[in-house]
Image (cartoon, rainbow, N blue to C red; front, side, top):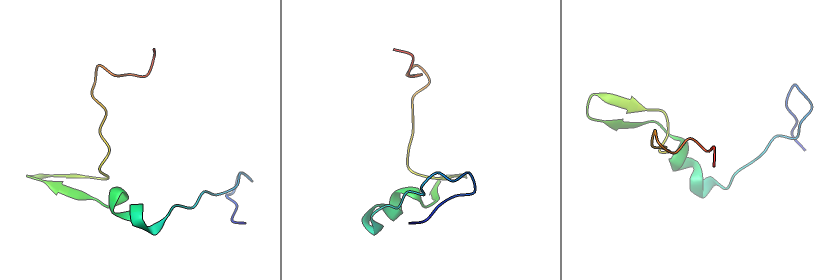
Length: 45
């Protein structure tokens, strides 16, 4: 099992999902991954 420096188990992901975590260029901006959360959805309920 892989572990990180703080002794929590490291997570592994299926290689099919690697494309989601690659940088993507959108016009003049490069996003670091393909996830986006709208500003009014802050997770507080």
